[in-house]
Length: 291
Image 1 (cartoon, rainbow, N blue to C red):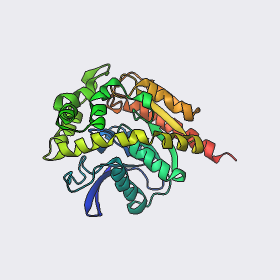
Image 2: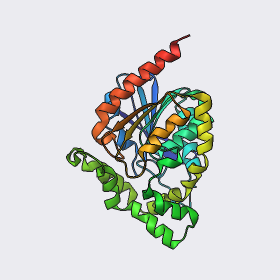
Image 3: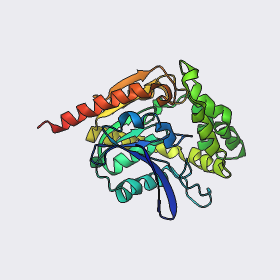
Image 4: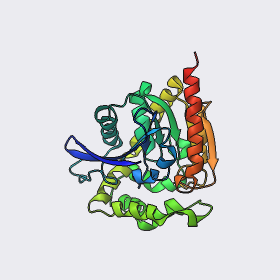
């Protein structure tokens, strides 16, 4: 059974979904843009018999607090700080696997770099850590990073429209009829809240800080060699297959699966991804148990 929680700390409420036995191995599910923990609604029931699952909504996303961009500093550092406090202080987790997608990758890799011995394994699903992983679709955001003004913000705001949100779910999918419109309708509902455009623009601009940390994350990968499963929608218009393969530069034993789908691979491949996760984490646990 999935349960739904609101916890207040530092003056703001954070929402998270939880499922599975508390004593089972924990997987922390870190969502992408423009989604929320809702993106894991199909995956969680397929894993909850074997794993303890925690899926938070970041501040400004989903059911978590939505303070204005003037009231809260929307950066990937600050979002990571909130997730860190939830996991370690509020939920008292000590060791867990992270599943990262899109925005979840820079948040998860920050957590892993800060707490390398807490991370038992990493599952990457269309979440980037290498320069070659960013497609030409990022050009409007690169322009925003270079010079933030009315023109570059106007171009970047195209990422906030209903058309673009639906495109992120539908593009590259073999059978669009399998994609529930609930997914992009719910995402757009939260994007359209008053003040949320300014929140997202702040994060668009701050995304450049993630590229600056790639070298640090690569060092973490090389030094600690966390077990990694890469499951990647190969038709993603934003994150390239080259970015998926690049993890093997630093983690040569990373397991890679390219799926015939797009950016939100869980929408039509949740059963396959759940099977891959179950076997991968079982193998990882067996390897940890060896003398």
